[in-house]
Length: 343
Image (cartoon, rainbow, N blue to C red; front, side, top):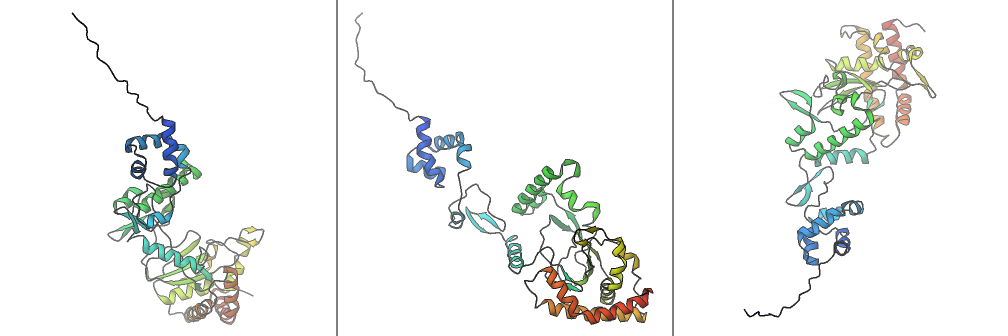
C-alpha cells in the first residue's frame, strides 16, 4: 500500500499570560470602570476579566475608591452601598423616601449646633431635642425592638444594614455575655416602658452638679435618654409644679452630701431627690402657687434660650439661672414652707 504524505502548516497560538492580563486591566479597574467596560476596551471576555480580578482581589480592593460623583451620574451599580438616606433605583442613586427626611432633620439639628446635651439646656428649659434613630416598630399601639431582618422586610434596608453593623461592633467590644445591641437598647425594659406619644413630660438630668428639670410639650414622638429621669404628668399644672420643686435651690443643697464626687465636684444626681417630692394636689394653695411660678419661669427661660442659639451648655444654664433668679427665690421660699425645710 502506498503511503501519501500531506503537507501541514504549523500554526503558533500565543496565549496572553495571566500576569499580562492583570497588567492591562488593573489600571482600568482603578479608574472605576465596570467589568463590561473593561472587556469592551481590551477585547478580553468578561469571564476572563472577572476571574483575573477575583484572583487579585486583595491587592486591588484596598486601592479602589468609588467617588460619590459616579453615583450621582447614575453610572450603574458599583457594589458599594449608598450612604444613609439614599438608595439604588434602576442602577442610579436616588433619595430614599423613608430615610431622606430623617437625614434632613439630622443635618438641620447638626447645623444648629444641637447635641446630645442640649435637651436639658437649663432649668425649666428644653432646647431642640435631638433626633435619634432607633430600631423600633409600632404594631397595634405597642412598640417593640425590631431586628435587622424585620427592618429589611419593611423596606428599611439601609437601616437594617447599619444596625446589623452596630450589633457586630457591640458584640466585639462588649462581649457576647452582655447580650446583643437590641437587648441592651431595652435593658430592664427602660425604653419600651415609655409612651413616646404622651403629650406632657417632665425630665431631669441623672448626672451633673445641679439638678435641671423641665417640662416637655410633645407634638410628635419623644423618648427619654438613659441619662435622664422622666415622668408623664396628668396635667400641665402638675408638670409645672414638679419642674419648679425639682429646680428649687434648697432641694439641690439637701442632696449634695449624697452625690458622688469627682475632680470637678458633685457629678451624679439620680433618684435621691425624688424622696423629697410630695404628691401634687391642685387644691393646696402652696402647691398651686409653686406651679404658677414654675410656668412663669418656663416662659422666661424659653425667651432667653431663643437668644442663646449656638452657645455652650454651661453658658446657657448660667445665663438662664441669673435671668430667673428672682423667680427661683420665690419658688425656693414656697418649697421650704411646703416641705418644712429649715434655713
